[in-house]
Amino acid sequence: MAVPTRTAALKVTALAALLVIVAPPVGDARAAGSTVDVTMSNFRYCTTPACSPTDVGYVRLSSGPVAGADNPNSVVDVPEGATVQWVYRDAGPGSCDFFGARCPGHNVRFEDGTPEGTKIGAARSNSGPTTITATITQKAGTLIRYFCSVNGHYQTGMTGILRVVAAPPPATG
Image (cartoon, rainbow, N blue to C red; front, side):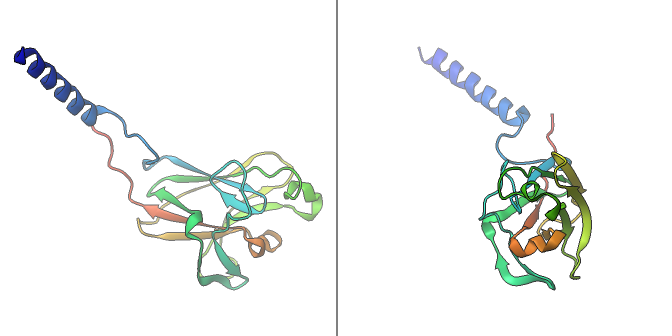
């Protein structure tokens, strides 16, 4: 009777080892070359379909970020080499689209030590979902702060932070 149990245990162990070797990773890990989605809505950036008032990355003045004012709850991890895709999804009361011509849209600018930042792209209001993309070339450990400069939207909290993380090793098999 011990032989079948031992044989079954060996088979289960061998199958488990094989799954560890060839199974794809499970969870939120994103591989280099993948896309990370960020929403632009309600004068905020976030990783959910609609942003809330608490989705503020950091406090920014016209001269640049305020030291020590990062919101750790709004940091988005992005693997080295990944593409970030900001999608304009602004609609409804209080949104940029709601204000018509008074709000021409949103943009993404990376902080670069200047008040203007480096322009990544822009999305016009009332034109449906619009995408801005950037490939992350910075090394792991880098924090990339970004903001919307349209009509000073950063003053209302439209700021975000990307944290570059090491890309997971490529799957073998």
